[in-house]
Image (tube, rainbow, N blue to C red; front, top):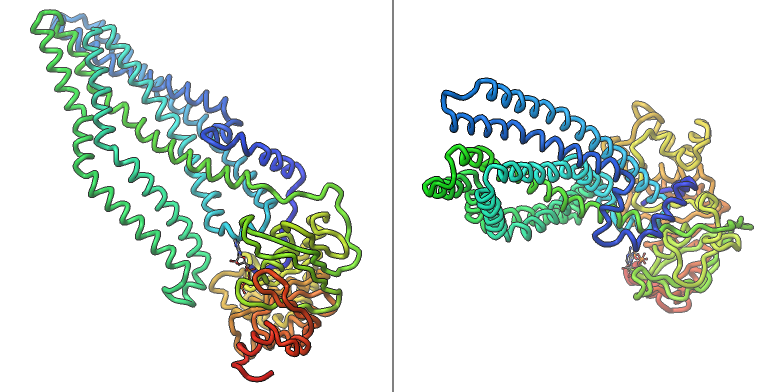
Amino acid sequence: MSTTATHQAAPSSSAAEERAGAGDKAALAGPGALARLLEPVRPHLIGCALLSALAAAAGSVPYLATAEIARLLAAHGTAVEQDSVRLWVLVGAAGAVVRLLLVYSSSRLGHFADARILHTLRLRMVRHLGTVPLGWIRSRGSGRIKRGLTNDLEEMHQLIAHALGEMVAAVTAVTVGLLYLSFVDWRMTVVTATALVALGVSYRIAMRSATRHMNRLLAAEARISTASVEYADGVGVVKAFGAGGHVLRRFTEAVREHSSALAAWAAETRYSTAAARLLASEMTLLGILAAAGLILVGAGSLRMSELLPFLVVGIGLPTSINPAIHGSQGLRKGRTAARNIEALLTHPPLPEAPAPRTPRGHAVEFDRVSFSYDGATPALDDLSAVCAPGTVTAVVGPSGAGKSTLAALIPRFYDVTRGAVRIGGVDVRSMDERTLLSSVALVFQDVMLLRDTIAENIRIAAPGASDEQVRRAARSARIDDVIEALPHGYDTVLAEDTGLSGGERQRLTIARAILSDAPVVVLDEATASLDPDNEAAVQAALSRLVRGKTVLVIAHRLRTVVDADRILVLDRGRLVEQGTHAALLAADGLYRRLWRAQSGDLPA
Ligand SMILES: Nc1ncnc2c1ncn2[C@@H]1O[C@H](COP(=O)(O)OP(=O)(O)OP(=O)(O)O)[C@@H](O)[C@H]1O
């Protein structure tokens, strides 16, 4: 990430809301997560469920009316009273109209609840992202964050606006159907209910492996969605490094896993699915009901006219259950989505200072700092150092030594595990977030630019800056000429194809940092080699940026730090040496070994 310190403090009301949310963590955990998230729209959901139930009941009426007409015809033949038939036709038609009205009302209420809760959740998630440690967001990955804000909310939408209503409607339709049939003949109703349960159980048995396969598929889908976002975000890198790129590999692995999950599902369940479908079909139920009914008719204890409603209404019952199966899948997906959303919403925000203090001066001090990402392995161990204002301090060391971690502690991407990081004598944890972030400019390797105009990308560091100030910063960062040469100059909207080189994009972020005029500059020196022109321009821009500031440079190439005022040498999280280039070479320790390794074993 390459950015100046730009993220905003969340409004205090939302911060309080988020703190309350974090306090609810224990209560939110477990199976109640979904219920808790939906709490604000509970009355709407109950209303929606009631309307769905009434709609389903009304929807059963045309079938019941048809069954009654069939009964009348079977009982009286052509001598049937026309008025009775007409009445049932009217009742059936009225049921259909009422159903339409109720479905409309229920759907309206469901979508209203859906819009409201999704709006609230979206806001809470975005506000919460503004309060959690930036380091957590970076390590979680943009793909997972975006998935939370898109796919998981979409699953919640499906659940609230569709699945809940479908399940309630299915249960009601079956209940109403069985209730009606019980008035016709209780024995046949028992047969119908038993047959439904038996068919349901055999369906479950035949589909028993489906849940496992479904879970595997859902997990694979989630991975594809995450990897797609990451792939889209990192397509530039992927192009630059070809198919060997990390992101592309994750994407192709996810696609492969999805295909193999799908193939395994199809292979294992092709017969059982067909059997399950046959078992739970209308034809099977028709066979059972006709056989049982004809036995009773034959025994003289059931009239033909009483059997007909079972053949008309009874065999439609399996179809009524189908939406419940679909709805239960929606419920399962909604639960998973709720858990993901909850995990994001309940991640503890960075504690805010109750009585913020203002730094006096801009020295950066690491005071016996220890930090661990996982609470077990130290990434930094009891490290103390001071970076004086107006000086450049370079941090060097082997890969994994803790250089980036040290830099990340200054803007509070993470909080120290022990010790303190101070700016101007004030612990960064005791500073107001705005004060802290306006004190520190970050120029990191992975250049982060927003899809906005070039002017706004620079201005984000100082929202009130005039056009002239933006231009002056761009001139200081040696990027002014490049911007002017673009078709829309400073109004060019940045996109993948804007045509800026890596070095030019880096200079844009330097312009941003220059505009912010933050007294502390944290710089992650580029490892990717730039062409000589770009490198010279970046160096010129940097020297303008760091003039008079307290500078901490994470250095990967030692030749760039020979002029640093002080070099901190880290190894496995510990500060093992410090001093100037000359002093460290003379000390004949780790720095000298690193120097010899990087300079091709040439004597210094
Ligand atoms: N987000 C993270 N979660 C867990 N562990 C991490 C994370 N970031 C870094 N680490 C671990 O912390 C240690 C220090 O890593 P750090 O990135 O600070 O080293 P570095 O000196 O900057 O390395 P490099 O030069 O390779 O960038 C390493 O063991 C690394 O694996």
